[in-house]
Amino acid sequence: MLGLIARSIIHRPVRNGALILAFAFIAASLFSGHYLLAGASDSVKSEIAKLGADLIVVPANYTADSEAVLLRGEPSTFFFDDSVVPRIRNVSGVEQVEPQIFIASLTASCCSLPVQLIAIDPTQDFTIAPWLEQKREKPLGPDEIIVGSKIVAGGGTNLNFFGHSFIVAGKLDPTGTGLDTSIFLRTDDAYKMANDSKVNAVKPLVLPQGVASAVLVRVNDAAEATNVSYRIVDQVPGTRVLTSSALVTTVSDQLAGITRILDLSALVATLVSLPLIALISLMVANERRREIGVLRALGATRSLIFRLILGESVIIAAIGGIIGIGSSWIILVLFQSYISVVTRIPLSIPAPSSLISISILTFVVTVAVGGLAALYPAVRSALMEPYEAIRSGEL
Amino acid sequence: MIDARGLIKSYHDGEQEVRPLDGVDFHCDKGEFILIVGRSGSGKTTFLNVLGGLTRPTTGSVIIAGKDILALSDAECSALRSRTIGFVFQFPGLLSTLSARENVALSAEIAGITESKSASTGRALALLTRVGLKEKAGSPPSHLSGGELKRTAIARALMNSPSLILADEPTADLDVDTEREVMELFREINREGTTIIMVTHNIDLASYASRVVRMDKGKLVPVEPVP
Image 1 (spheres, rainbow over the protein chains, first blue to last red):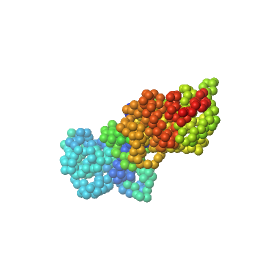
Image 2: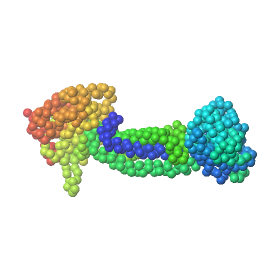
Image 3: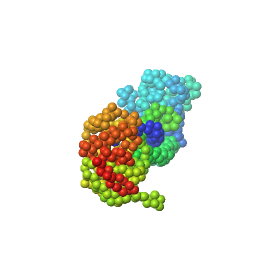
Image 4: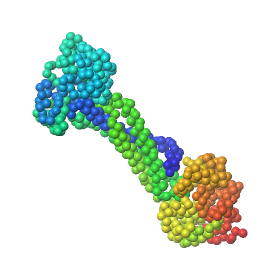
């Protein structure tokens, strides 16, 4: 039966090619929307995980800037008084805190645009230290920096910021988030850099003593991260807490427009294609009436005729689905960085399990559309009296 | 072999009732070669299709090989068609997407005859050789002449070794020589024991048959025995 279906599909290359393209468009629209959502969501979760924090506390009036730094690596400089650090540490459920200072650089030799400098205190750090341990690197020394994966500078390279020279000690793995364009340095060196900038930099860096831009928080095992975040906001006024789920929501909201357009395209394509494909299937079934009659005379059951007509449409839809999923997958991977820049959304390749489920879901929906479109022609053909089919059809 | 009783087939054309079959009784023994002659529209093709279970009569009964085909389910009737009956139509009825050999082998595939692909291909090739088309086995129907198409259709009808062949105007549109070749083939098949019921408007073919009946206005009328 499969051979018969395959021959029939090949026999009408133009019409079936057009049908395959229609199904490919439906599949590509569906797949792309879900891929972008999963990619952005995974990217944000991976960033929070890489930072080793359960919560990130930022100044309430700089929430958008904080999200821009974390999600997109858009450089920004903002502070709040570091007196919040011990108060956050004292909140019930907090196990560990790490203050960080965000500084937007001037242009540097590594980069055509300003980058985000993140100053960390090695004595309290739980972001970079585990990574250095994992890579069997020594702790960050004076004037040493760790660069994000997209910073064009190898180990041992000298980079100059605000007139202060640093040596690249290591490079982070890609995350698909703002971390890829960030540079980590020691807080002490940040203050030295600020001091040097008064003499050496085109524009001096103003970095007051006793400030922080964000406080990374680890909660203890017994505590619920969400409850701790409520307590921090309640007990430490002027702060806002970012959680991975909140960041995912932010990204999802940003993506909503795009995914809505993609889902709408898939819906419109389905609504427009469904009757069109049904009509084409009906035309094909009508054209093949005599063939169906002959097959019935040769002993084909109604069920076989039903499966033949339905099978052809389902196989066409399946081919279209595979082409749509495959091509959009390739395009999304190849243009991932470009899409991330254009949409201003962090994007990584979704986890294999997400990719597989998105692909399966898209494939099933596309094939179901194919099956639905051919249902009426298949039933009609199967119920046709063989003699009537033979008399009225052409072969 | 076949026993049909009280067959009536009627339908309405507007207000008027049309009866292609108007009370047909018919009996056929195993091994007979029966020619049904009659004018166009006399009901002979409808009768042949009722015998083959391709259309249902309004009333009446058809017993083939001991089975009342009107009482059979679709699957049972399809199985009977595929294993007991071979059809040859006025038009070749070959699938344009398949080669001559594949068209012949298709009958076995549809019948669900469980044999290896090479065995069914071999049998299809043997049948095509028998009808003189060994060299054309790989050709698509569009590359075959009218006579070759007809002979391929006969080979396909023989694929599942049926005990009955129902042929509807199999020599229509053929030249005299090709017509003779096709009829000789039918005679040969009949002599091997296969019952043949053939519908034609050409009374000159009567010499090939063991019995000739005439269909006139939906009724069967006996014709003088063939000498």
